[in-house]
Image (cartoon, rainbow, N blue to C red):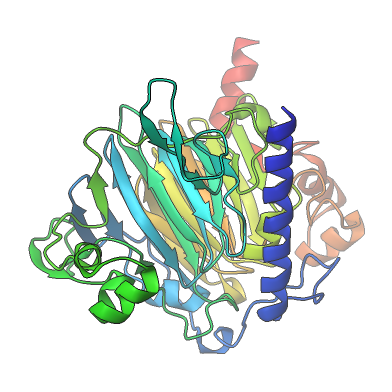
Length: 462
């Protein structure tokens, strides 16, 4: 128990130090400290955006691998470019290993389906997890006279459906499916982050393997075109790399393998054998937002909403992102609202809803259905509302601020509720009675409302 506590403390201190140093390097320092509406993001992009119409986005490209595939939303889409994000979806089959890589931008990963393990490697942090008891040598003698290797590595985390995983830019990351069904994960990258200093494009750097290149088109089903060698180590000259790694040329050839056609998700035939942390141990980079018990807003007839920000998961303050997970029951309404300090990238998990988004000068920029697997970009200050249809609707939203704030039009603590009745009367040219209805008819409800049909059905049954 003491050893586990020591390991956790060591990792926590290392992670804290890494985030502190990186924030200083990226200019995140103290600006905005204590002011959740101030963000250290680059805002030069805002003047270039003229959004008159929004549309739901579909996955446009599929890259197959030996044990799964990766699908991409077009990062050059005007809506994604305007808010400075990119997104993709991984599907990892059982015993599939997502090869180690790092990204040029911080990201949040949401586990849509399945369970598995992930590993992260933070620069400068010690390898505090060991497969066997520590000895003076890397090989130790067993009672039977056999030798076994003592491995050591950084912390490994269990993940499951409903988890949000926060990954800073430049931090190495890998994942493995140790379950019986495919793991599906949607990833959102903040390409406008100060950590992405080269430009606002998303770049993924593989540390092993080779990614497959495919045609890009409007259809998800695409044919294999060629193999692209993008393992970083494959770009170095053989002899200098062998000397730097302290290995022979033959091993370097295997590492640089130009004939590796497995892609970025490979099959581990005999299963992955690594030391894992206890399932009950404290988590520093992930938290589950699919658990109904964690809901921040709950209406038994309308649904629930769970928020995750840097107050609940401190590493989010460093990656400058947060998340919201919601469920609407049939015909229920997510009330009209706007984001005060963030853009919202909404991914439909299950079901479908009718969505309305209103932009500057009261212009309707989107009205239509929002279905499972689609992405919808809602810029900062744009007002939106949606209503589930005949079945329940579930979604996850990624926000471009670690402590995203939302303002509602109606309900408890809303904009209209906070105004004097006289102001409402004169603003809308309505009677006092009408102003009272507008202000108080939703009572203490907030964010989630039942439909008129549902309310009438409740009265009738009563």
